[in-house]
Every structure is written in structure tokens, then in C-alpha cells.
Image (tube, rainbow, N blue to C red; front, top):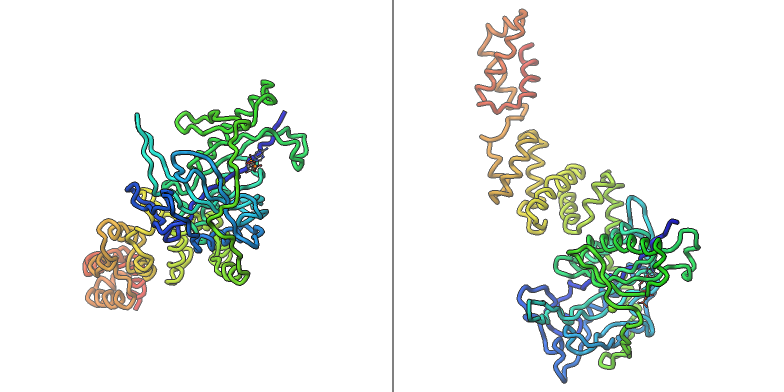
Length: 483
Ligand code: ADP
Ligand code: MG
């Protein structure tokens, strides 16, 4: 028997590009020092009230539009009631279904293994993040920096059939958040977290009928894309094994967690133990009517997204699909490349330098391109010098290395004494002088002593201290000797 995996994702991504949090004036920033970006509202002090951040609403509406979702007429929040030490109010302000959250019933096209696929989006909603807990041997600490950070939760339909599809979607979504200025999408800072839902169904059943789907297993809080991939693959194998040992039907719907160290999903609780969150409308935030004119403005302001840039790179700049993909994967890399194009560096040259040499350096040093010393205009200087033949390709690579290690301008390494003489006029002058000073050797050469050619090359090299461009020297010598 063969099985079809069905996978649905709940992707949480912090909105990191606003100055302040969702309901307070505390800075919305990632800080290494605990409890330094906190206001009384974030700590739920009695008497404090939330004030909605308009920019968060704008960015969430933009995300909803990018996902082709239906947008509500009114914006409304709800309380999700539960107690946990990272939740000082005893409830989370979120959006559930009344009337609808910031977006429902959309879709997104993404690329996986060279094919464009479509995933249906069930909904996207805006909510506040919880504080974070750090656990030690016999104590735990609470860091309120994260409490109240705006969070977008996106829920897909269970349309993915493999770990690769799910991860490709997450990568696409992350770059969309980056390109649209919603979030840095930095998994290392914990800005993206996923719940992964997995089931398997018999291959011969009709997939469009939900009654044929298998038992949904939810895996909570997977913090990296690698973790999502491994958790899905593990869970598919585990469930197939249960089918084959006739234990599948007795398996209750349940929540599991991904144990990174053991590379296993582990049982947490069954669906019957599910908490009743007793949702109701958040009374401290008035219902908000969305102005259609504002929606238009937001729509107009959506920047070019990665897939569009990729198409432009292939169609306008003639790049390979592979190079285009590497360039667009990270917005900062793609911006750097576009700066090179704006400086009129040849697109293929620029792509080559960025995808091979620069990315190689960045990966080696685990560095970001925004911190990279060598700017596009420095790169242009090096490439221009190479194209004018005043330096060789090898020298270009050497100068590149010197610029980034010594943190000096390329000019400093391109002084005359270090570079080749490739100026035709300059070389012709030198060569014709040498030929006229060596009349007898010239005549002997013309009378058949062809090995004297090397003698002339040697003289030119001596005169230029070895800096004459060798290919040009030979070409010009051939002409001058015939004169
Ligand atoms: P719940 O009510 O338990 O939160 P939902 O129906 O809202 O469940 O679905 C939550 C997530 O689980 C969504 O991402 C959805 O696509 C996914 N999902 C639902 N049913 C299945 C299934 N049979 N197999 C895998 N994923 C599923
Ligand atoms: Mg949620």
C-alpha cells in the first residue's frame, strides 16, 4: 500500500520592521539584554491599556494582499484565554474568526524543485507574541522583551505533499516578508516559528474529500526550516509504520513536539485534553473600520517580490535560473546585485562576482552582505580595470582579497607599478623604439632567424620591468618588425 502525506503549516513570523510593539511604545527590537524593551502594558500592570499600532495593521494588510486573501471590512481583536508564565495578562490578544481576521481564503504560488506550485491559505491573523522563558538547572527566568511584539500567523490548507514542498514554501514566505519590509525573518533570532500538521492517507482514496484524510498530528513550535523538514520526514515514516502494524486507526489526534537532539517527535497531549480558550472580543480595542482608500495606497506600495525579480533577472539580464534563484533568495544580496546593475556593471559579470566570490566570502565568515566592506562601486572599479586590461583576472581576484582583508579602497592596490601595461599606444611607442634601436637583429629576423622574436619580447619585458601585457606585446611586435 502506498500513502499520500498531507501537510499543513501554521507559520508565525514576527513583524520586525515597526519601531514599536503591537500595543505599547516599547521598542520593537531584538535585544541581547533581557527586559530592556518593556513598557507597563507588556507586563500587564493593572490599569494599563493597549493602544493599537497603525503600522502593524498596515503591514498585516499588506501581507494579506500579497497572499490574495479576502480582507475584512472591520478590524477586530479577540482574547485567547489561558495561563502560562510567559503570558502576563493571562490571555493573548489575537484574531480568530469574528467576523474575519486580517485575511482569509487566499493562495500563494511558490517554486519547488523547478516547478511552480500553489498553496491555499486558510487565513492570516495579527496577534501579540508572548514573553520568552529561559530554563536553568533549578530555576527559570522570564524575559519580557518579546511580550507584545507583533506576530503574523499564517495558516495553510493541508496541501503540501512532502517536506520539500513545505520548506520551499517557508523559504518563499520568508523572502516575501523580507522584500515587503515586514520582517527580517531571521530564524536565528527566533522570528519565525512553525507548527507542522502531518497525516497520511491511502493513495487510492479521493484526496479532495476531507473525510478520506488521515488523523492530523500537530507538531508544535519547530524553530528552524531544517527542523521542519526533519520533523515532517520523521512523522511520515512513523505514521506509515503505524499503518503497517495496524496501530494507525487507534492513534488519537494529538499534539507532539520536535526533539531536536533525538531527532524525534514526542507525544505532548491528545486533542481531548485541548484547552478551551473561551475566546471573546477584546473590549479594550475598539472595532476599526478600514478605509478603502488606505487599502488602495497599501496595495500600490507593495514592492517587487522575489519571483518577479527572478523573472526579470532571467529575461532582462539573461542570467541562468540557478543564478537568479541564488540572488533573490536573500533580499540584501539581491539589493546589492541591483546596485551593481545601477552602476552599469555587466549583469553576468555582477552575477558571477556576487554568487561565487562574494557569497563564498560571506559564507566562509558567516557575515552579512550589509556588513561587507567591499561596496558595489568598489567592485565596479575592479571590474572596470579588468575590462580595460589594466589588470588580469588573477590580479582582479587578488585585489578583491586585499580590499576585504586590509579594508582599503581598490585604488590603493591598482597603482601603476603593480599593474600591467595594456595601453596600445603606450606599448607601441616602447616597442617601436626597441625595434629601431636593434636594427641588425631586425634584419636578421626578417632574413629568417625567426627565433630572434623572443629576443625582442625579452627586450620589451626588460624595458617595462615585466609589466607589458604579453599577448599585446606579441601582436604589436609582429607588426613593428614588418615595418
Ligand atoms: P485545529 O482546529 O485543530 O486548529 P485546523 O483544521 O484549523 O485544526 O487546522 C490547523 C492546521 O492543520 C492547518 O494548517 C491545516 O491545514 C492542518 N490540517 C488540518 N487537517 C489536516 C490533516 N488531516 N492532515 C494534515 N494537516 C491537517
Ligand atoms: Mg495563534
